[in-house]
Length: 280
Ligand SMILES: C[S@@+](CC[C@H](N)C(=O)[O-])C[C@H]1O[C@@H](n2cnc3c(N)ncnc32)[C@H](O)[C@@H]1O
Image 1 (cartoon, protein in one colour):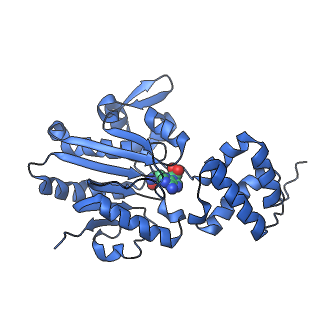
Image 2 (cartoon, protein in one colour):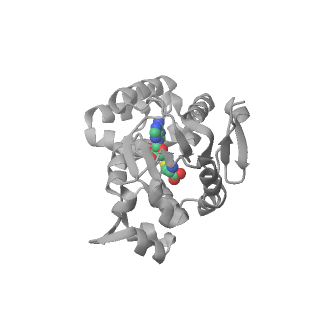
Image 3 (cartoon, rainbow, N blue to C red):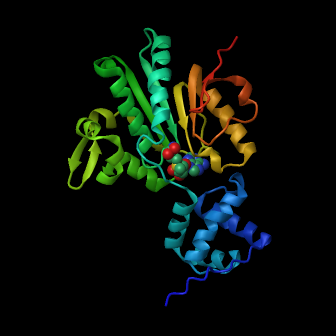
């Protein structure tokens, strides 16, 4: 019979620090910025999988085994997501944010959106579909770009492909599948008209360059894993990256913290949508 007893892991803080510096060196992942209990839970997954009894044991595995480096990276970057995740948030963006944005745009026809921590592309392509549905035939009068960024190379590669399995499309409805996807073998690819709106690139929110000029920023279910001090810095970065009156959409379980609270208006608190206050 299989032994289902969990492996007991010894958590020595010195060994933990050493492991974190190896991870930084090998993966470029800055563990110190992530909530430590979350980090330990993620590491425990790999310690168990490799039957390591301590951080020291696991460090040895990591140093010897490149496949484990890949596995660890996947475990640390939680990529779980879906198309139109929290549909009620998309409904609010569509019904409240987009009309306000279009009204403010006037003759300026440039719409710039950023999906920060885009995982495999589910979020940016949902945004592209939502915009197409909202704007209808007037979409062609707008110069739309959706910047999709993530720290994880595998996610970036998948997001660039814009390819989804049938199972991933189950919740979005047949009409959207017919309109916005092309069947390729057993998978479905986002049609070119929408795919070309989405520019995917690797970007680390913590150490990467700062951006500007966005009308809407989606950063959902990413900062939840970061220490509060870092969250505060990132929310200020998002504030600076937005145009006046631009919108910041957070994850349903995330809360604005730090100086950014004063700089944003609560636009739809239930859906965690904030609006950048105009400069006086
Ligand atoms: C749970 S997914 C969120 C996907 C999508 N935004 C959603 O709400 O469903 C979290 C994503 O954040 C990315 N991530 C984690 N740390 C990051 C960092 N420092 N910079 C950029 N992306 C990061 C992960 O690779 C992962 O794809």
